[in-house]
Image 1 (cartoon, rainbow, N blue to C red):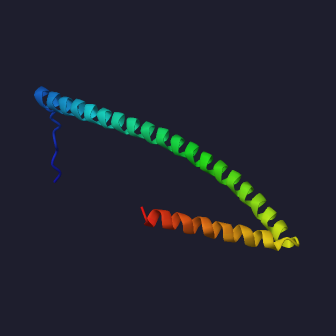
Image 2 (cartoon, rainbow, N blue to C red):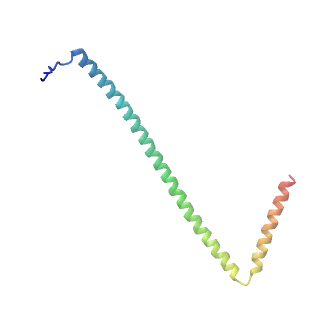
Length: 108
């Protein structure tokens, strides 16, 4: 035998409580969405700033690489020449400068 269930609507105060709970939860959700939006905007700003810094570093590295390449080609050209004693003098001079700096810092 089948029982018949009779639908009884919730009392008005129960509906009101559910509506208030829905409103509270909606308000909390809106606050959380606002926080997430603010956070995503901050992350986007930081990403743009970091991207600009990386582009600047990349440009600096390109310039440095070009400068280093030119310097290495000049050193190679100098070493191919018959004036190898100039490179030796330059090396000895650099060693002398470093030795004098070492002594000056040690005796300080």
